[in-house]
Image (cartoon, rainbow, N blue to C red; front, side, top):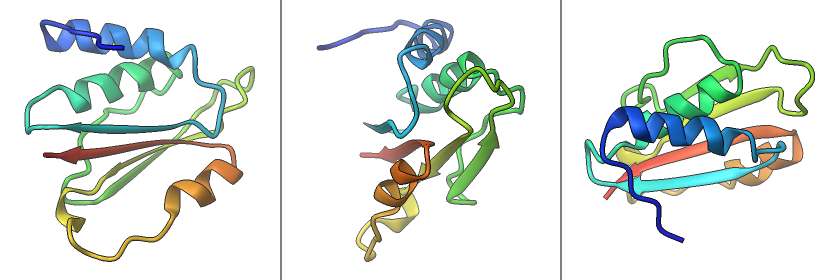
Length: 111
């Protein structure tokens, strides 16, 4: 399936819709050039999950963790990881561990 958006606002709006399909333990792997809209999509997902924090790309911090306050959802936490600076380094199976703990995991990587 291919979905095309034409602006950051459209991408964010799609992220809001996508968030409604997430049930916990989901792993989304986003790949694209710098400025492709990965963070705009994550902002929409976060908004759809009820996260009110400012969402920024964790390029330098590597990982941002957001608590989800909406107890009606089975998702408790969203973890946003940017592996751009880890390319070529040994990586552990963080997504596997998070899926078992009912985390929402978003991995962002620039091509």
